[in-house]
Image (cartoon, rainbow over all chains, first blue to last red; front, side, top):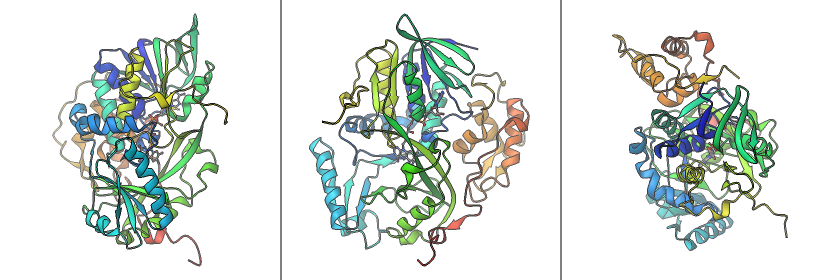
Length: 375
Length: 108
Ligand SMILES: Cc1cc2nc3c(=O)[nH]c(=O)nc-3n(C[C@H](O)[C@H](O)[C@H](O)COP(=O)(O)OP(=O)(O)OC[C@H]3O[C@@H](n4cnc5c(N)ncnc54)[C@H](O)[C@@H]3O)c2cc1C
């Protein structure tokens, strides 16, 4: 077994696998360690596939905008596999005046930092998506947003990284990191000790105890998130959808099925969220919500439901940073339920940090030491 | 947790077989050859295979082809079928209209 390398990436989700890919592309020798038997079995293979800039916190907007402009459009070609990227816009829907006020606030914030997003009325919405219920009176519209297939995107990064020689081990749990003369040099696992010059922690919610083992704590909690998928339908629309009420989001896939997610309101208190069991009330709630926006889907059948576990940072955006106090440690975690769309650019930056370079995208709002007591 | 898996484990070359064009997953029309080839591209578990090719993700949710896919993958990997963990069973048991699944509260 190979146990020594330049960089060890912990976690084989889209963040870890894409980081490994960008490192290997630069000739760096990489080992990826994954706790699960299956590659990408965490959030990366359970998410809604939204590749959104609109509605994002301005601190992660540079990553979102960079990815949409420079990475997503050519990703299928680069990885040699169709990741089903569609750039047909995002509609965030509103049914009440209060919804519209909330959407306008978000749109104004994003416009102020250069994103093309504007408010449109019910009639304009129907021109973009004719299936919409009359209850929808307005929306924010971001034409450069879109979606991709998370299952394929995650495996495409894995496959390409592996082709470039990245050594993956699955069913190996990282227990802690080890220091040699004050530098992170060892990764201690269920299968023995690995040695490296640099560790990238991209283990989702599992990142917290790993970082704790060398005295670094990032305040984040697990939170369950439910998702449903329908049988295949003839193509209806390609927009990514969300709502001001946050009752559902989703899109139609290339396969024809619709993937929808949403929350019943009790997510923060779900039992054992890290086991990723579907909750009993949420699938029904999501179906009810969708009926209020797309009555045309009422007779469409749900074939499967599942859940994922978010890694929610206390201020809702991830940590993407090099750790100052310890040489040889980079963290990319706490994506807080919206790390898929920014995964390519986040991973590109993580690879730069791991190579000792300066980040080429602005991540100044995503530092690990930003968590201070309230004023 | 299962046994440590080296993703560069030597499983030999992909050798085309005569019945590679036989459809194994009828819902999503996935062939034996596609499944065998995917194993050589690093797709080593049932969960990965379903996400990679969509086998077992259609209307019957793999109730028809699940065992066959497992057998084909095990042979390709040189392991026993019982060493491959089956796919997680997921609700609902049968495909269900959204308006019916939505109707889980009495008095609505
Ligand atoms: C239902 C749902 C819907 C979502 N919808 C969207 C969306 O529409 N748009 C969007 O942008 N984002 C969305 N997200 C968020 C997005 O999926 C995640 O932010 C993203 O996938 C994070 O990737 P990751 O690689 O950091 O995490 P993960 O994919 O969870 O990967 C972490 C990996 O680390 C492994 N690991 C953990 N501990 C250890 C250990 N000790 N040793 C070794 N390995 C370990 C885990 O097994 C896992 O494979 C959604 C998430 C969910 C759950």
